[in-house]
Length: 84
Image 1 (cartoon, rainbow, N blue to C red):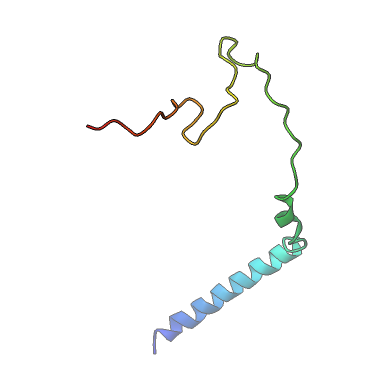
Image 2: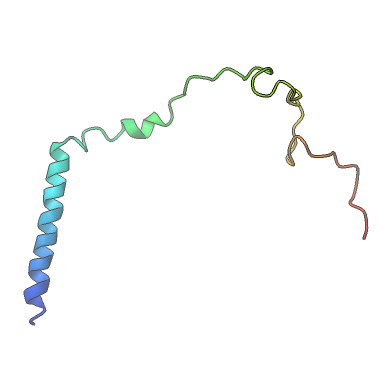
């Protein structure tokens, strides 16, 4: 029973602290608009222009128009792998 002398006041202080934090954030406007931040991620950003081939390394070859799952620089497969 003596543990209640510590547990009940500690629980009341904890509840009072959370209630104070809630009232403070509600007065500051934290709960005014709950929909706009969730919808902001769906808005399209302005499209970026494609990089010019002369940007960066001028001696680099232009990017290949081919691509595959293994990457654009992987050698094409000509058949099954060789047996060991």
